[in-house]
Length: 309
Length: 191
Image 1 (tube, each protein chain N blue to C red):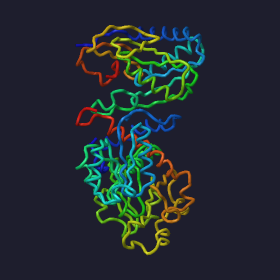
Image 2 (cartoon, one colour):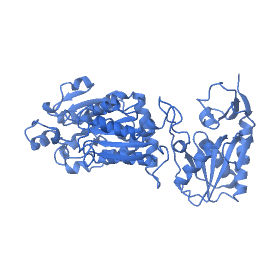
Image 3 (cartoon, rainbow over the protein chains, first blue to last red):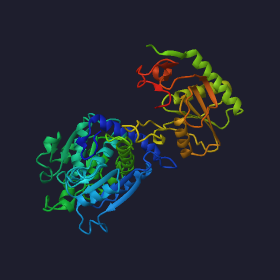
Image 4 (cartoon, chains in turn purple, cyan):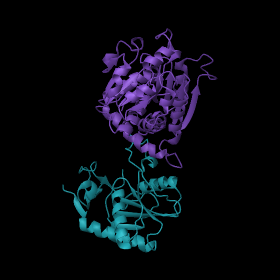
């Protein structure tokens, strides 16, 4: 494995398998009365979040704590960043404090990469702008493999705001790497023109895609990232691309319904659809902890190329 | 150089039968016993012991498998994070007598880690240790309760236990340093 996790493309297919297999062992830890193992005692993990995120931050925090690492949560409000500190100076401060790993979320694509220039610890991208969100993709791959038993040959659709979605990019790269077929579905304004180069198909017609899917992955309509209007109205979006009861009926039996959260119920997914047994949205969250434990363990559990502890 | 055979399949079988008898004798039966094998190969030996105990006593003893990776004392000292295996101890071990089962007892560090792992799963009334081979060179104050065979070794030798379930045959071998194959099968002490 590479030193940092910035993109799903930093990983080989065998790296992905190793991470998912390791996560399998960590899921057992989550079922214990004492949900903690001493594997990363004495290591320090910094959560550096420049964007609000509840689930990803808590998931990383729990993952690090269950490995007995010390966790520092650095959020931008009420910190030196609110006083105007640059990313570089924050990074140097964390470096001086001896952070072994930095989990960064930033609204600018590429910020995690910049961070690697200034720190000696491992950097984990927890979402950067509209670029990538590799740990989300890995927990999705884990959930799919856990539920369907394999990844190779599966047919998945990723539906919605692909243009602004770092989840869509990372998951597409991950699924294609593992031999699955991916169709990106959404209004033409929300499908990036370079999408075919990701190895995915493109469709503007959700109803045509539904009947042959193994995985139907819905993206959140990210209104906060849309500076211009990409579709006429939320209602029209929901009518053409929302997963309704009727559309669920067109899915093959056993097709998983997934969503990275947080959901806009009634927009990209109907409220009662989100609560169907075949929707594995809560499992995605639970598995996220095990997958992040696996990543932290694999990245911090060795001496690394520097040698020494 | 071919590895020297310390125990053949029949000797392994007899040693396990004797250990099963000793476990029953020490604990006055199979009541409240839980066998927990340390992955890898300790779990295979634990299942063999459970089968022996069932044959002798007619009691089915729960068997679990323990992965001690998270509890190792050398995490971060090796270049790569050690590979993780499955832990599955379905029986409640609180108040029970847990017999830890491993293939080779060497430095004692694996057993130390296993005891830490066990107490995270519950509070056993007692923990006992059964090993197929004790090769000496302890680095911690740990002693086995049940030993298949004591084997004097040099530190640079590799003691390898083969079990039919994984390796296709039963046996204990000692290999000269650099003789290879240690990646394929269990080597004493997990160094």
